[in-house]
Image 1: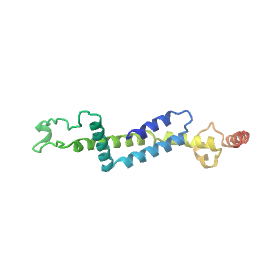
Image 2: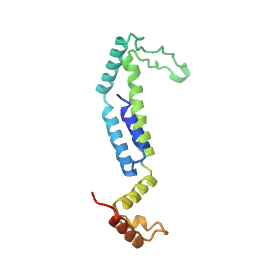
Image 3: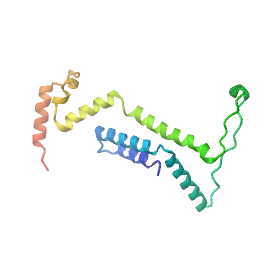
Image 4: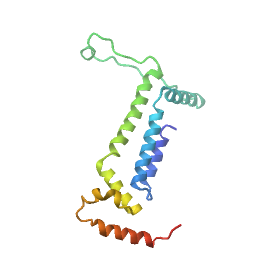
Length: 161
């Protein structure tokens, strides 16, 4: 249930018909869904679901692992924090997992190269060169006038649904 958005994104990114623009939109949707899951009520719901399944399947109950006290040189005079309940122990792990997934998706899919690739793809898929002339002028091997003519001919040959 909680990894479904990431599994769906994984399948979508590996498909042979996915465009870069569609891929970036899918990543944005998954990030929004993961951000919406980042609530205490979502964690409580997950913990309740796990507890219910554990009881139904007669599994070992979820418990707080034994806490080792860190050496005094690390804590100083303060007492170390120890979780007293399953919820207290697993809540930071849950939020850390979601934060990590959101951060990784942001870092991997927000590069300038990917954005430029998406712009080039848009030119080729729509045939509209006017919006991207400045970006296309950075490529000396691309003659914008010739590209415009070639795209018009290409789109003229395509059957219209």
